[in-house]
Amino acid sequence: MTGVVALTREDAEGLVYHECQLLDERRLDEWLELFTEDGVYWLPTSDLDRPEGASAMYDDALQRKKRVHQLLREPRLAQTPPSRTVHLISNVQIDQSDGSSEATVRCNVLIAEVRPASHPAPQLGLSTPRLLAGHCRYDLRRERGRWAIAMKKVLLVDRDLPLFNLTFIL
Amino acid sequence: MQVRADPEFDLHGLVDESSDFTVDPRVYTSPSIFDAEMQRIFLRTWVYVAHESEIPDAGDFRTSAVGRVPVIVTRDQQGEVHVLVNTCRHRGSVVCREERGNARFFQCPYHHWLYRNDGKLAQVPDASGYPQGWAERIGGLLEAPRIAFLHGMIFVSFSRDGESFEEYLGPVRKYIDFWFGHSPTGRVQVLAPFRAYYPGNWKLQLENSTDGWHARYVHQSAVRTMQYFGTRSPAAGWPGCTRAFPHGHGVLERPRDDLPPEVQPQFEAFRSLLTEAYSPQQAEEMFVRRQITLFPNVHLMEFRIRMVQPVAVDRTLIYEFPVRLEDVPDDINAAVLHRVTREISISSGGPISGFVNADDIEMFARVQSGLTNSPVDRLFFSRGLHRETLAPNGERTGDNTDEVPQRSVYREWKRLMEAPAAGDADR
Image: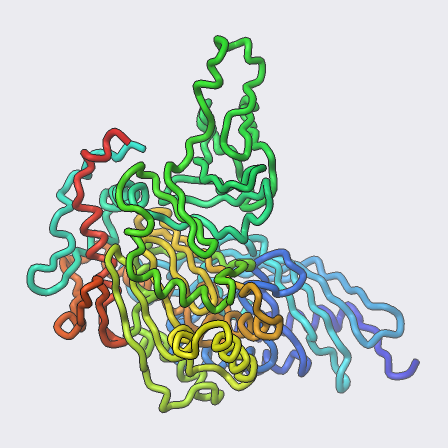
């Protein structure tokens, strides 16, 4: 079969690490470009296979654009001040059938996050570093000579427990 | 249930209606007042615990709480619903740790005391260690003495007497019927919830769900995002009104004029369906976007049930359940779910990451931070006090921006908190 490209470990890690860098540097307009036209970003709040009830995020392209617009260009209170993050990725595994233009990358993520207060008085929710851990699944599709994200799903360890302010992009 | 003695200071005067309408900020920050609230409000009045659709079959259960009292809401083998205190009668272990499930029996892991799903003590291992008939006298898990149902919502009162459920509801009942009337059978099924917490007092959420004024400020970024993407007209304005009722209930309502194009056909069909099921006039009155506060812990929001769960004076849980309407065509339910989970103005991430709700949560943390250790000693809830109207049935009505529902919350709060605990001592 012509045109089929195997997803190498270097490709997979390169894509995921690049995404982490964009998120940590809040380059969210560039982050939007990583997805396919029909790509979905999913942050579930249950173990359901489909978003049949609530999800913290289940964003198609338009919803991602709206979210990024609110985050970067509007006075979004829950991100004033914005979250500082460090994304750490490990346990990268690649799954691709022979001859397929699609592949799946699974990895673990640990996100350190803090919203720094400039004010010395205690501010609840600010200046308190948090660790968020989860399993990530990236369904990738080869398009226009590059691998693009058709689905990014982050399954947090505390997905079905009460959560607080996940208004940044995980 | 024993109501404990007064906290060390006087609970009178914390809500002051004498000239302005003001509230002492310690109602949000004092652990003593919080302890008193858990006794005088949550163990006295009617409290929402679960929805029947979470436990449809015999043996189904879900765990919940009444104030800080952990409970198991069960459906027994005969189909009766029980609200049982989730504490083993022997030495006090939590009996059930699962959020939901199905079980005929609950066994305490400590010494294997076994309870039926109606709460009765079924078996104590090696009963020869007790005199004959001893276990029968224990009875079983403690059970809420009064239970009431409305459109599948399960309410309990841990007080044997006090106002009936019907008296507690009063005239807000009409609006609850409208809300559930979006299903021709008046019934809904709750779906997988948002679960969130915030570092703030429970009343901050209770006040906020029917606060029409803050939306244009706190939700400015969401409104501007909707305008930028063309799903909200800059001329939309803030139509609608606030309502309040005896016993702390309130309503914020506005026309359902904010439907995005992708769900408009389904909502047109929905409106026609309701017009057929009811009179055109009633359907018109019903097909309105209403946010209803039922004091002290549940809100009926646009197609979702939001339950507020106090944990500590400065920590609160929110469980928010999208609903599926019974006996409504699938494509309408799909449009409803789209509205609830995808539309900026409704939820799209709810209290965790929603374009709207997450900014409310941020405000709750900010208010809690602002009031902790602050010398500010009165907070003002008097907006619109001079222009609200009062009907003979106790219903008050005000402008969309008026603090009519918030005053209702604090009138009921005052009534319950100032009522002496002595009368409850033998409960």
